[in-house]
Length: 251
Image (tube, rainbow, N blue to C red; front, side, top):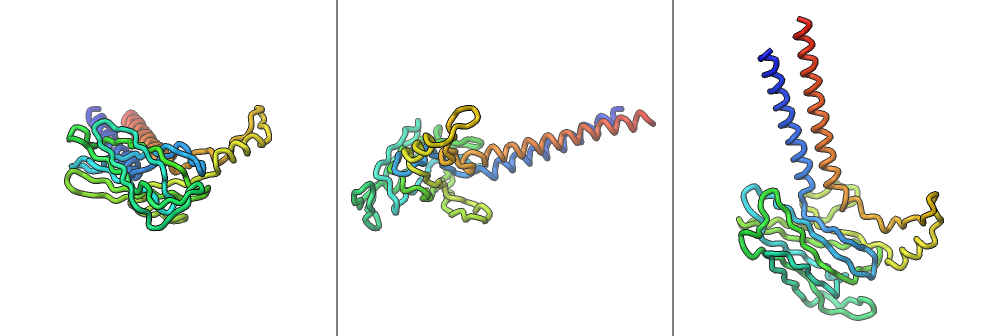
């Protein structure tokens, strides 16, 4: 009986460790610097939230640099304060003049840099920090806004999240945060108002208002996959334990 319990405990410990590795791997696959806009309507303003996890096992993160677009520049950029971090908005001459809302723009914010003020506010292992910007105006509908970032660690390592994702291809190792603009808010409101009533009597929602799956589903899907694997592995271990007990009883 003791041998049976010992073998069962060993088996459960092994499968639990395996399942933990599956979950950790699923989480690590999505541990990128990402951006989540609260509004993607063209010609409007949006709050952009950058989520930056620490991926080093030995160092902390102490700086985040975000490059802003110069071909479709934001003429307005403001920073939400983060306790223990200093933010700097860098304004530069554009490579060429750009027309924004009927005005010719030759200079605009081109970079935002966040730096930790001290060791206590650096991002450690199993931690992340969120950094937010208010920006505008957003470019025309259907424009992909790419925001390359650089993440600096206390050991001097710099990870550049600047690789362009290509449609139909696997995600690159260090994808650049990005989002695509949608129809202007007034156009979406007009489309919603003219939509036929649904069975419940409510107007149909415009597809443009739905959050992109790449921004909301990656982390959830990864954890769901990991937890599903954990459940399957533990279930198999329990079944093996029951069958072992039956064989012993039959003998």
